[in-house]
Image (cartoon, rainbow, N blue to C red; front, side):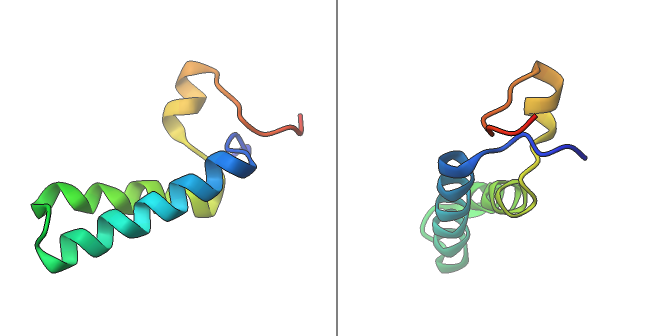
Length: 62
């Protein structure tokens, strides 16, 4: 796995993922809130499979 998720993108994924998970746990937005798990995982691992398929990199290192 090569790193393809950079600083700001990574922080936003983690924050939005945690918010969605919290909303799903309280029943505010329903089952779709569990998509936050994907955002949280991609933020924590700094790797997004969709970015890899599309050739997108938001990090500075090569």
